[in-house]
Image (cartoon, rainbow, N blue to C red):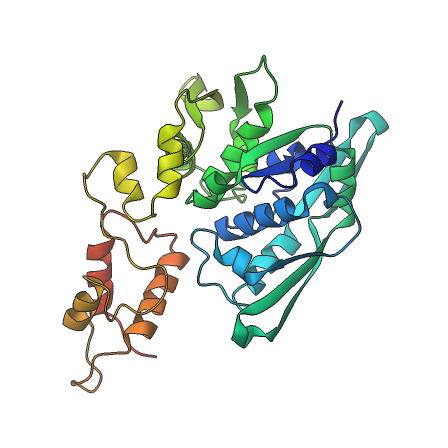
Length: 344
C-alpha cells in the first residue's frame, strides 16, 4: 500500500492538487479549529511541503504565494501573525490503537517571517511542522487529494472542513455515505463547547450552508444530508456524496471572479450582485464611494472621512461578525453602517 508522503511526492509538480493526510482531513486535531483563512494557509503550507511534509526541515514560500489565494490578497507580514498563532494552537491527536498509544502534539513547530525586503514585496516565510504532525504524516497510509483552488475559493471554514473530510473518504470505492452523531459532526466542524447547542441553529448556521456551498459550482462533489431522529431529537446526520458527472461548470466558476458568486449559486440574479471591495479605498469604487460620501458623518461638519480608513474599518467590522463582503444585501448593510461611522 502506498503511503501518503509517497503520493504527495509523486504529485509534487501538480499545483492544482494538495495531498492531505486523512488524519488531518478528518479533523482529528480540531480541538482549536483554525479560522477559514488559517485553514487556507494550512492547505498551502502542506501543499508546498508535498512529499517532504514528514521531514524535519524548514519549508519556504513567499508572501506573494499567499496573496494569490482568494480573500487573502491584502495580507502583509503583520496580518499573518494571528493566522500562524491559530495554526500553532491547533492540536493533533495521533491515535495508534494497534500500539495502544495516543499522542497529543501540534501541527506547527515554529514559523519565521523575514520582512527585511518588504518594501520591494519580497517577504520570505519559513516554517517547520511539529513532531507529532511529521510522525503522523510519516505513518499515514490514507490521504485526501483535494482540488487546491476549490479549497481556496470556499467561503467558510465549515465548508472547508466538510469538503476535506468527505474527500478523504472518496478513496474507498464501496463507501458513499457516512453517519455522524451530532457530537461527532460538531467536532469535525470545530464547534466549541457551548456554541450552537440547539440543533436547529447548528443545522442552519453550519450544516446547510456548508453543503450548499460544496454543491455549488466550486467543487467536484455533491452532498446530501439525511437526519435521523429518536423521538423528536436529531441524533445522527448521514452525509452521502457523489462526484458530479460534468465538471465543466466547476472549472468555469473557479475561473470567474468572486463578485456575484452567491447570487449565481442561489439563482437569484442574472447579473452579479455588487460586492464590497476586498482591499483598497472605495474613493473611486462605485457605488461604495457615493454611499460613503452621502451617509458617513462629515468631520467637523465639512470634510468627508478618509475613504481608505473607512473601508478598512468596514471590512474589519464585517470580519468580526462573519459577514461575507458579497452578501446579497451588503450594499444596504454598508449604508446603515456608514451612518453610524465615527473616526477614532
